[in-house]
Image (cartoon, rainbow, N blue to C red; front, top):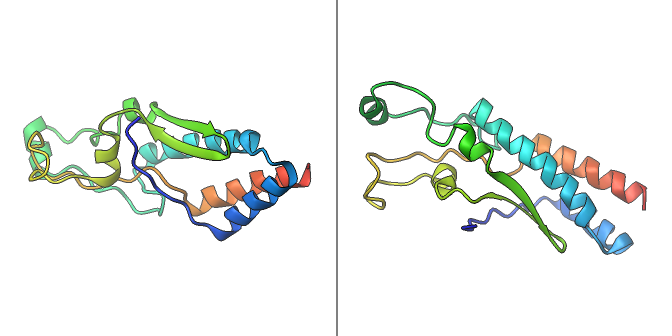
Length: 149
């Protein structure tokens, strides 16, 4: 998997993770549960066309519409990318990502001047990351594990 890293720095989440590590030392089970939730949350962003911070994705440009002859789904919006989102738990680390080569272009965008194969600039349409709601759910999952240790 090509890696583009997004680091989440939420004090409450980190404190809860540290408490759980101190109690059990093994985060694999809660991280797997969090990963499964985040995959579904990430897939939902494709349906709502919104970034983790709640901002709407930019629509197709006139160049794209002209080239395709219609204004159809946004590039990367099809289920091909959404269905290729997966969690990977390794030790006490959780990664959410995709093996699709164009996932980084969807997340970060790209300029035609940097990628000659593009017919125009591609705006960033972020799908990876934690929304406020995601952070609340992650804290709830961690709290449940802490309470049961």
